[in-house]
Length: 186
Ligand SMILES: Nc1nc2c(ncn2[C@@H]2O[C@H](COP(=O)(O)OP(=O)(O)OP(=O)(O)O)[C@@H](O)[C@H]2O)c(=O)[nH]1
Image (tube, rainbow, N blue to C red; front, side, top):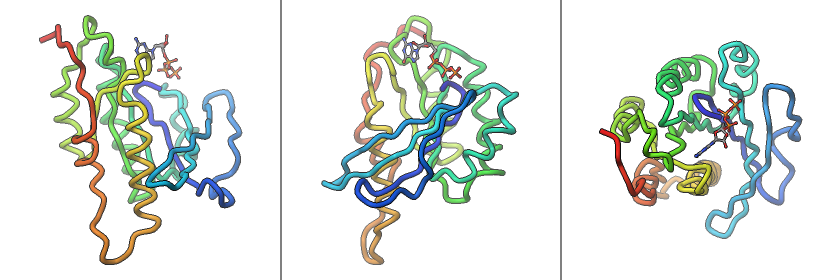
């Protein structure tokens, strides 16, 4: 899922789903994930797109309806990081205007091969006003947090009362995220 968007749509854990059932195909995989937010079950339907250029025309159709997009790059692979700007441009054009976007720098466990500094991810995320953290699919670092933050944001939007203070996903992520413990590069 590196250099690529993963899209999420939600449904109430109990209610009929807003999204159609998962039907993965050759260039997309799909999984359901239930996250508990303030005692309520939020079901996320997660689509993992392939990042290759040749799939872009196919993936438009999928992320057009997404409520959230997780953009992953690989901290050991510069081109995956460089691709993120192109994806953000695509998203601006094709995704819903209020889509929740999160930038994730994956493989944070392999610090010896790091070529993208955390600060570079932070700077890019700030430029686009999106939350950012580094993750590791291997150790699990910040992985649950990424889905929890998305679920919180979507649940908040769905049930917001006019006088309720808004949920600030960037502040939440900043306060909860773990930082990689070692930084042997630059
Ligand atoms: N050390 C480490 N390896 C990882 C991590 N995430 C993925 N990998 C490894 O990187 C390789 C590629 O992982 P994939 O998830 O298939 O990569 P991808 O970019 O999604 O590939 P496509 O779905 O084909 O675009 C596999 O060998 C994974 O085990 C991570 O956080 N840390």
